[in-house]
Image (tube, rainbow, N blue to C red):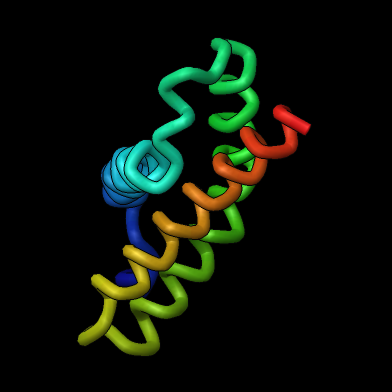
Length: 94
């Protein structure tokens, strides 16, 4: 029986690529992260991890509904995760 759901290995690979893209965006959009204390960076990563489930669900839905623009959905997902990390860093500084 074939389902229209990605397998675990595919999701793991997608999650890994999404995490790399999100971290790259975090550093590019908020270079102050380089001066953050380790606990501030940990908080940013935790905030990003907390958003992975809903962001990944949205990415998969968008990619299924509009496969020709799946790359845009991926970029949007990475940006959403990066923004969660940036907000955590900003909140930690206030």
